[in-house]
Image (cartoon, rainbow, N blue to C red):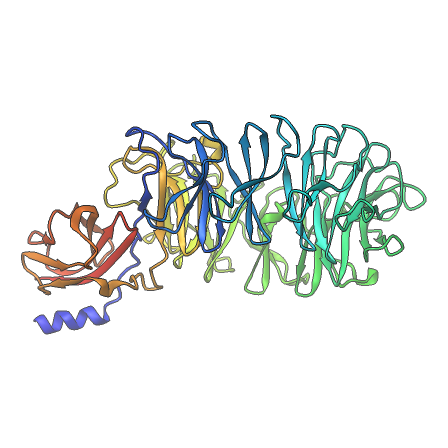
Length: 600
């Protein structure tokens, strides 16, 4: 019998098992209920940087390598208990740039990962005022951004990474007016191209090499370009820059069309009048797909924007299909040689569509919310051989859906919050061959979930020592913070409160293979196996039972035992005979070990 069971262990296929979250570090220990509130995660030099509050130094810049010992504050940027309110922004020229508040106001800082190497780049707005820097772009080994120096308003700035090399490129809108709120910019030919606003000439396409002399206006100086930039777009295609532009006579009258530039004034011109006459095409949602430029535009025959394609010449710019495509640009997702998006054939019920760039290959995959109502496709995420997204139906509200690209293969994953209120699915992250996301299973109970795309394989993920079912991650609209969940350096980091001790830094380690088996399963041994009463453990020399928890999961994926280890043995005599997983989690080191055993 023993040989038979051990033989079965080598060939049995276990169901997917939840990888349990591990507390990386209790950063704020000032009181039991205190939060460190970690967030704004970013990768840099093989580590993960984030903002957190230890209750002593305020919210500052922190770093982790995934271990407790390797999680620490980089520097008390704003000395004392005052918050620096750090927001990591971008990695540029070997350094991490972030914004922070000090007695000098909110300014741009950088770090090399050390306290000594963490410095303010420049006091752009002298005194204690904030320069309100935002909208960062890298082009030609320079970093461009918007900032307000208190004199010229919100204008474009550039830096080479030094204080001396940080300056305003040009006062494009003379005086204190500055630029308008919307920002559109792109790197092309080692220069930075952007829409600049002038009170007289309105919105024009500009280019800069980072110098005042090299900052010039490319588009014709028409004075009637008075539309906002909300639906303006730009993209580099076939070594040229295509962009949305609004002109007046002598080109068109009150006309927004598709333009192109090679980077020179002479080479900046109307590409095609998509809606001939005085009508505007309003081209937007630019995507390069299958060596063509796909975009949305009105035509002289359409009352709503349709899907168009261009091969880079005017004659080759044609309507693919008279399809109303109104979904957000970020929802346009390439997968398996096709492009998936939210569309509508009747300018109403928006559903999941797909295109291969041809009329015949553009169609609705499934009418998820039948009738005239929209299904509200959002959060489209590729996860291996599946496509996940959130959608709304009259029956279930907003829930998680999955698709294999076909109608029959597009299904509700699980009705997580039964009824019509919906689960408010957010924060989709593909990690360890599974999809992790946040959702609510009641009106207030927000949780972290994992799924393999099946109803049975969709479950709440929580550590073995979880004592509360309160939200580990609430959507931003329900009081949560943005940037509280990110895959970085082979870990899934997030902010959570599992023990009613405040929101702290947790992770799910990237040590699981596609079969759900940790790669470090040889780090422990167990005996006897098969077992009847007590299962003994031989642990790594560096491990003690002080910070260990044990979880036993049966062959159907159900957790049948969770406990803190007080000795290197587990009483299993009450378990039914069968095959089980043992997962031992080291909560201090952030590691987990797994073994399979037979209970006789």
